[in-house]
Length: 295
Image (cartoon, rainbow, N blue to C red; front, side, top):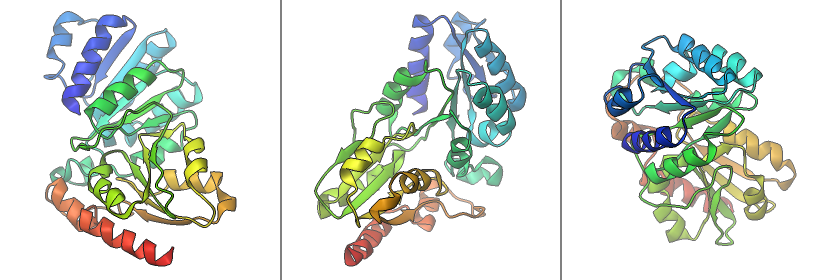
């Protein structure tokens, strides 16, 4: 998605003169043309993430539209207080685009892992959360949402879905096969799930926006006593809470496949981590068969 990120932002820079960009020591080469053309609107702040967020807040307060970009743990963990107070509390407009979330940078170890980002951002009132599944979805969702009044967090991955939906900010895509089992897939986990949706004629709710949460689609698809399997490429919590808080009276049987709530201490690439943590077609099919027995 990084190449599309550069294309999307480069086009918007030409159209919207209020956009400014702050980089946390990554993306400098990718955005080299913007540095040449708009050197008063794009800055490499370096590894000063807390200052970068506060600087973005000041720019937003003056009517600019900041885009902040660096690796997920350095936006979310290191600068959480600034995100919460400067943007969340003050309801300032701003866009925070991360790369490398969960274990996309697996071989770099714990300092570069961030499976907790969605839950942390979900705990900031007013923070909108976007998890695109491929480059086209990112382009559409960013164009639809970057100018909203609330701050927005975008979680990018280098691993993309082949299946393409026409996505809309704040809305979920769905397939209603009238099944008792519904798969809730978030962002780039869909690739290994979509063949199983077709094979077993399951319902699918595909989320690319976690907040605002699209209650209408869930109301339509989730019937009383139905089974739900949430597949999310991060620690469980945010999506579970949204569903439980909205549908307490439907007696749903909810199961999760998510990143285990522990530190990831193994080295290797993302595919090796996916296999160890159960993000494979084989494990998804095993869990679906278990659900079918219970339904």
